[in-house]
Image 1 (cartoon, one colour):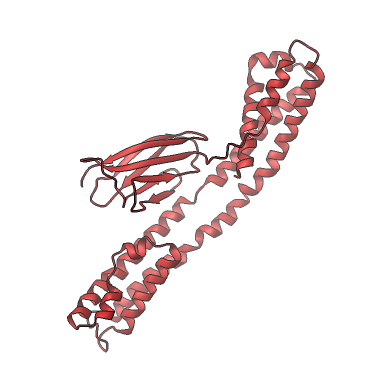
Image 2 (image 1 turned 30 degrees about the vertical axis):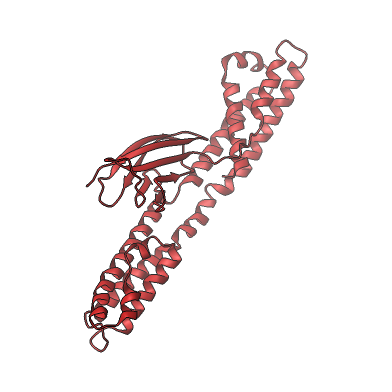
Length: 305
């Protein structure tokens, strides 16, 4: 949902709340045609919220599956690269040894395209020098196949979220604007009736109140953010190589090697569970209440595993 659409939804929610007030209904409920408008605003707000829910489905299952495949790709390639590196060092083949001398993060923490490229380059180097004919006699054809299968599994998953996003647009994104247009139409009708019936009465202040609530307010900020600080329990130092995941939608963020900040945004408001993990630390599952239009900031202390 775009920022303006979100602001218009929030305006509709405020109008619906105004119309649900018993004191307001005493004044406006008897206006001819008003009940149809009140019902229409409530229905449109609900329809937009449902469309937003469909859009906010963040394809967590696919994202998690892809991440696991990426991790497996890194694991398999580096496992055999370590063997090849040692053999190359023993033979004094410094160029090959250097090319194979990388940690798993060299692949796993790279962006998806670069990760596959790095994995393929290392696999191809080992394939060109594998035993029994090549110098890396501790690398065999079966190892190359294992690496190739892991790489292909990741590549097959890499583009799946794009396809699912296209399918979901029909359920969520593409439905939002027409529903908002209908909502704005009902709101405009209510404004016109309120002016017509209340401008010259003691309840004229209700017209101004409703018009204020109906205005879409763009605050220029991101919405529904959780900012977690992952720190070591023993000294409060920053954990820079961790991972934070929202269970509700599968969104996750990895450490950036610079600070303890792990930020996830665009999460549906309400209670949600978040999982924090880091190498050498006991994982933490934390319940956090996500607030609409706000940043919720928490500190998660992690003990040694």
